[in-house]
Length: 335
Ligand SMILES: [Zn+2]
Image (cartoon, rainbow, N blue to C red; front, top):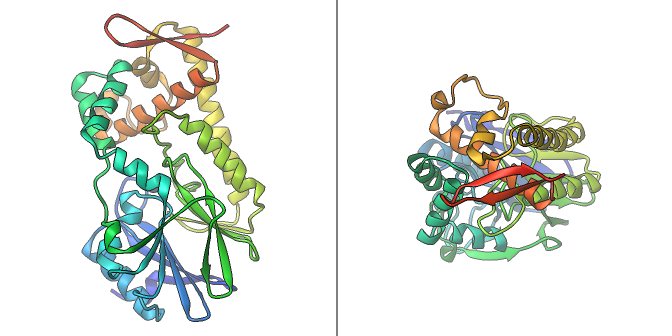
């Protein structure tokens, strides 16, 4: 494979190179990793999914850019497999890695048996059949992606900075897609490395926050936080870079508000449905007529997103949930 085909300079001052690390799933074929370079220093934002091909593409690209992998700084926007999955393969021992403390804490929580049981209960409470609830909960349990002890891992939060040459990038908290999702903002050029916070290829999924919390509200607040930065360019993690990111941020917020209206309408017209029944009544944008035909991974995402909407509507007082003797919650409008 010709590595130079995977590298593209996408910004000057600071110099930013996009490396597309191959990765196959339903909506995308690569993770956009970014290499920010200045004054002989380099900062790599995200890695890619764990595969031999991906490891080779990223390693060769860094060699071609003249990046010393041991001296470079590494930053992870979040801990999904297609972002953190190559850390152990391409980052040498002792290299400086910047990650969100919240993200790491939540990832640790989601690997415990207690969490698996709690997640299974969450799906069961919505009326999901036991077999589907168990499968969905297993899909929601994160696998360990890398060993933070092997590296010089620094935990960062909103307002912290990561320097590369003359540039000081600011950490911006953008939770929603994951509970501890981070972005990086360079204030002179006003460019933002936004990870999976805002994508064009899909509407990013929103996490069912493992501990109590309203993931959708966190996501909507993150959109506002990014809008308030008045960025000049968004460098996101999947799909081509586009100039119309402001419209996309608006669209994403509107998309979720419309979905909330839809869910409220379903609950108003059909009092005392379970979460599962409500979620199945949402007009999802999937090419299947029957729920049973939808692949399990996609069904898991839809179930999770549906619960995220229901949790938000309960939290903001639009609907209420009442638990019945069988442990299943049924929803009603609040008038
Ligand atoms: Zn992600």
